[in-house]
Image (cartoon, rainbow, N blue to C red; front, side, top):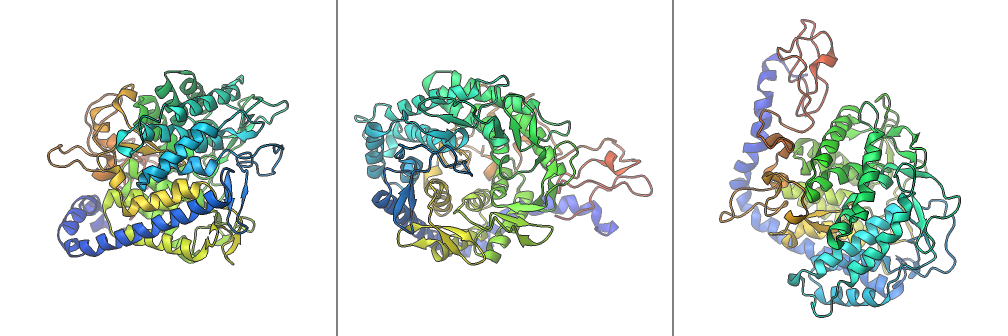
Length: 584
């Protein structure tokens, strides 16, 4: 708690720190450091480039056209049917892979500027890839990895600046994506409209298929399937994903919280505990990104309510625990590596103070163990006994990229350097990059996940070289596949949301509009998406207005939530709400 004489000025100091200090500091003191930072970025860019090609070339040598590389034995695994299949049930007998890692690498090849290899990959996939295979696949995993990879690569292939010979490309990747999308549709044939988690690519829905799925599995389909509809003119894909998302949102609790697992036939929750990690994470991500991509107010309204609930019931200082969706009471106090995406999401809505706070805690854990363990028990200050692994996940690198682009703070370059060094020290082997089975011993596991090339290397490369993003307007799917923000895809989007580039400030000739990433503010606080009018006086989206204008109160509940730290305000003995009781 601050001394009484300090409370009144805290808001002013926070605003000065967030707005004036970075401008002053980086316009003067950092000028001398700019050449050193620039040199480091070039050096690290080349280091990441070598990482990508070490992983990619070993995959092409020892695993292609199978799904993923086993780097320790220099062999392969046909893992598309294993993704999400924890018990490895109902595996196909005659499935020989779908070149999963190659599909996942397509946009990374363009970002690295390797147009010739991108062209060769497109030609091979056009001539050889088929989805008419007897394989049971996880809808969510296949959607974000394969459908998203193909849709994104099609868009990049039709961009003449990416070096692909337009004479040889006749929308083959889009045709493959549409074929896969049609095979997805049977999953949505349920009484609720919520999709089954599993389908067979050749035979559709299998008899006695499980009706259990996750919140992410139902609520993280709209970007890929919506894009497919916009590209093909067939509304069925977007309609199916949107119906599922709306049904899922209707199942939220009165606290605007959702559980983790549910039944797609009955529409009943099976697991009431929830958080921002596994099973739920990309649901939140896709609400805000769908709003950016398609411009529907509906997505923004969902996101804002959901985000407020997360801040109110899950957040504890810089950490996010899990809570019961019905009561809001904490259930599990744990860090999971998938939560590390959250600071990046917060950058998109301008909550930089909260994003920085959480990101630093995740990085401290990374420094402690050398990598980010899958699950860490916060209340016991120990690793989860059975989830000590690190499968080359990208989330910390992703948030580091977003925060650097928003702040230009060179400290994030140092974070990226640390991540790159750890990956090379602990996971690089002769045959590629191997997952870590136990972070306490750094024992390796014989698996190089496709997302290492789709996301981890990509985000690290963009951290040190963002030329791909200059004067371009992309959002990235949860699997790291870039999708362009196009005005002709927008149902309705206020002008504030359609700058030339969501990730780069416009130059002087282009004007002053810029993104939430570069403005360091929450767009919701500048413009109301529904009404289109300007509003003032709110620092961040997590703000909950006071219930009483004069700040008189009978209990803490009446005082609302403080707008910077998102912590509950206190009602004093004298009956007044304390306005600035917490320090970030």
